[in-house]
Length: 561
Image 1 (cartoon, helix red, strand yellow):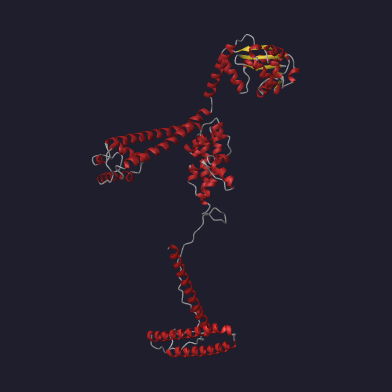
Image 2 (tube, rainbow, N blue to C red):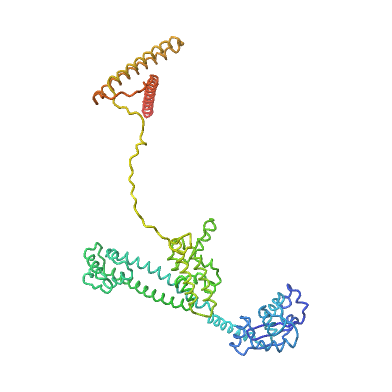
C-alpha cells in the first residue's frame, strides 16, 4: 500500500513495509517513537519538491478546493499506476476525485489518519535531503501566502464592510442624540426659548455656531438658515428672554460642542451614502425588497451574507426578536410575528391586522433575494423589483378585501345606499300609567280625632288584660309586671303628647280640605307597645354604658394618682 503525504516543501509518496502492524490502531503510535522504528514501517518511494512558494500556494489551494494539481497528476500517473497498489489519502474528498479522474483505488480510514499522524511526527527523519530550517521557512511562507489568498478572494470580506458600516451608523446616531441633548440643555440656561422655536437639531446647532451669545441675535442675519417668520420670532424672543447670563468661556465650550455635532452629522450623511452604494453592489435584490438599513442589519445580525442565505424564511422573519421568542416559548404565549423586518417600508405601510401576513410573505421573498445575491452570478436587481411588485399587489388586495362584497363574484365594490332621514311622531300612551286609587295626603281634624279615640279605647282594653294577667301570675313575677304597667302608662302619655303636637301641626299647615278621606286601617296597639319597650331598653342600655365609662375614667384617674 502506498501513502500520499502533502508537505509545505513538496509531495511525498511512502511505501508501507509491514501492513500487519497497521491493524493495531491503538498501539500504532509506538512504532513512530523514533526515526529507526518509523523507517521499519514506511519507506520514502518518491518526493516531488516545489520550486517556490507560488507553486506551493497553487498546489494547496487546489487541494483545499478538492481538485488535483497538474504536478500531482503527473506524480500519481508515474508512480502509483505503475505500482498497481491502493493509495492511502488523508482527505476523502480528494480520494474521490483521484478515483474518478485517474481510476485509482484510494483508502481513507482511521488507520490512515493514525499513519499520517506518525509520519508527520517523524517527517525530518523519513524525508532525506530537506533540512529542518528550510522546512520551517517554507511552512511559514506558505501559511502567510495562503492567508492572504483566502482574505483576498473571500466572499465575507465585503460583507464585513457592510457589518462595520451599519454598526458605526448606529453608534453615530446614539452619540449624536447624546450630544444634541447636552447642547440644548446647556444653551437652554442662556436662551431657553430658542429650543421651542427651532425643532431641527442641525439647524439649532448652526444658529448657535453663527450667533453665539443671546445679545447678538438682534444684529445677526439668519436668512440662510431660517425662514423670515422664524427669524423674526427668534429675534423677538431674544429681547425678552428669561435665560441667565453666561460668560464668554461658557459660550466657547458650547460652540465647540456645536461644531462637533455638525461634523458628526456630515460624516453620518457620508457614511449612509457609502452604505447605500455598498448594499446596491453586494445585495441589490435585498436592498430593493427591504431597504439598505434593514438589509444591512439582517446581514450584520447573521454575520455574513452567506450565513444569512442559509437561514429559513421563518428565521429571517423573527431575526432580531430572539429574546421575545424564547420568553414567549417559556411562558407559553404567542410568539412574535416579526423582528428586524418590521422596519421595512412594506410592513410599515400595512394596517395592524395585516402586518403578520405581510411580514411572513416579505420574509419568504427576501430569502429568495438573499440567496440570489449570495450564490447568483448576475448582479441585477430585476428579481427583487418583480417580487416587490407582487407583494405590493398582494397588499392592495388585502387592504381592499374589507371593502368588497363577501357574496357574489367578489370583484365588484360594495354599493352603499343613500341615507334618508325618516322622522316618526310618537304620541303619549296612557296605558302604562298607574291605576291605584288616589287619596289626599292631608287629613281633616275630625279624622285625626276619631283615630285618637280608637287608639285610646284599645289602650284601655290592653290595660284591663294586663291587670287580669297580673292576678294569675306568681308573687315573684308581680314586681316585673308592675314595672311593665308603669312603662305602658309612660308610653301612653308620650303617645298622647305626640298626637297633640300632630294635631297642632295639621291645623297650622293648611285649611281643611273638602276631599273625601281615604280608607286606612288603624295601626295595632301591640306595635306601639313593642316600639316603646324597645325605646326603654335602649335608654337603659345607654345609661349602663354611660355609667361604665364614668367608672373607667375614675379608675384611670385613681391609677394615675
